[in-house]
Image (tube, rainbow, N blue to C red; front, side):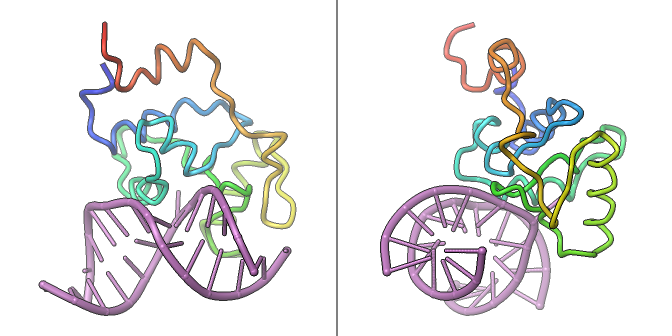
Length: 120
DNA sequence: CGACTGACGCCGA
DNA sequence: CTCGGCGCCAGTC
């Protein structure tokens, strides 16, 4: 099960579950990946994504909805463009988390995010 | 080896 | 809303 994977693999796996048109926070991904308090690790892992298994990095934002990259930077522009392509409104370099934050449903939590399960 | 640095986050002032 | 301060920790210098 997912418990057998490395922290980085669990983080990538979790981010791939974010649906199109939805976003998640770095800390939220860390929590869901079974790594509470490790928000910074999420950002770091996003720099070493295996090219053959891409992840929708642009759907990950700060907890307040802000784009993590400096405004007007190349990455920020790309992220904003990709978000807007999926219908996510980006205003003042930020997204309304209340409206777009991903809330994993029960099946997803049980079967896709089954980290640290004690019994099969 | 210690100091500094992040694609972060929460809390209190 | 802004600012510190602290927690977090692998990588870099």
